[in-house]
Amino acid sequence: MYLLEIDRGVKRLDIIRGQAKDLSLKTIKDVGKPSFDPGAQFNVLMEQFLITPVDMDPAGIVGKFDHLLDVRDQKFKDDVRKIAPSADDAQVNNLENLVEASWALNTIYRIVRHFYLLGKKTSSFFIIIQLQSLLPLIMQEAEAYLGAAKAFAEGQPIGDGIGPLVASRLMKDHDKRKVQKDVVVAETTLEDRHIIALKAEGPGGNVGKPGDAIKSLIEENPGKVSMVVMVDAAVKFEGENSGEISEGYGAAIGGIGTERFKIEETATNNRIPVYAVIVKESIQEAITPMKKEILEAGEKVIERIKRLVIERTKPGDTIIVAGIGNTIGIGQ
Amino acid sequence: MGQLSKPRQSATGSALIYLVAIFLFMVAILSINVGLNMYFAPNPDLTSSLVYLSVGVVSIGLVGMTVLRVRRGSSMAGIPPKVLSVVRCAQCSFKQIKSFAMGDYVFKAEGRCSQCGNESLFINGIYAEDLRKRPNMLTG
Figure: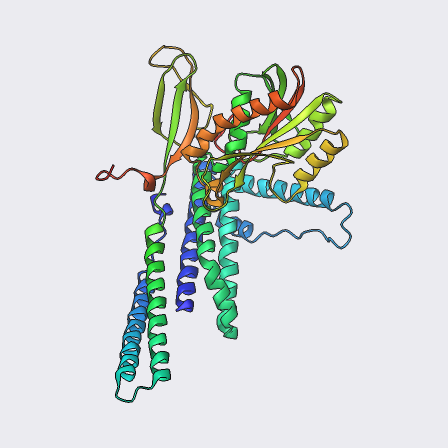
């Protein structure tokens, strides 16, 4: 019974990854208009991997990770640009996200199939039962990645974009400039305080490097920044409502940890408090098209920021508000 | 892209699971029957009858859980969300909700406002409407 269920799951995962691949290739052909069949190069991208740095001697590992991720991002983007030569920068970013979603589905399928075949081969009841118990969660994640692929193909904002959305609302009608990699900044005022709002450059799918941006903004304004507020989507617990808002302390930013490290280090060196305002959502909601309740949470987040600013700073202070997340489908 | 949001269901896989479930259900009924006969026999073998009854009850429980899971799995298979763009005018109160079109993004300029005539229409938000949450027409 368990084997039948897993077999069914593996077949379904195969169908899902096939659909994501078809969608990716179709979008690459439609948007990128390559003069050749991109299938072979796409398959090479599907099998890419990253070897993490040695952590036996952890000193300097953040820099190594950062360098490795930069190399990977640049190579991935260049590869996507090669198979989609007619795509503009925003479209290349969207295609990159789309290919990453396909890569994730391909990897999920390969891992599940590996343990399924291993369980059958070794007749190990424990491998089978572990896989069977995890399968509903894996299937949920796979379905979410498929939804994400569709959102990336069409350039729709996803739940993770609530941070950039809030920052873009603060930036609206103000002059923007680019700082660091793919991050835009605009200066505005809120309750008589000087606000520097930043987000990844949209509307292409992009998360930028907000750690580097915050660091450079603090260095640009030595001794002036009195607070950093970070807005991000965060995973809710089951039973909590999507779109609920919570406040906390520390750098609200996901990923492998390199950006968080930079923000924490700069904030600590300059004795700047870092506050986090998060919007709760499920993992599935974070990577699929943004739901109404999450969109509506944006205005409430701005009210929370206003309250935080009034309570924790004085008029005339400079505050950095960072909208963290994927800015796909969100301009500035 | 329409076929994307709903992966095909493996009909043979479901049928096979239902067949195994039916077989197990029959085994369970048989086991309960044997157990009850032993219990009410003139010389009841209490231990064996309890074992048969337990096997029957546990089997029915397992069958029930599996059938429920298969049904839940197929009913949850993705209903594609409808994605909408909210268009607003920066000068007046005009607001319009339209279906998302490829190329739409938040803060994209949308041209002239039909209400005030200014070039101030823009997309204020894009969201997905969860079709599963739509109110039931019968119950409201």
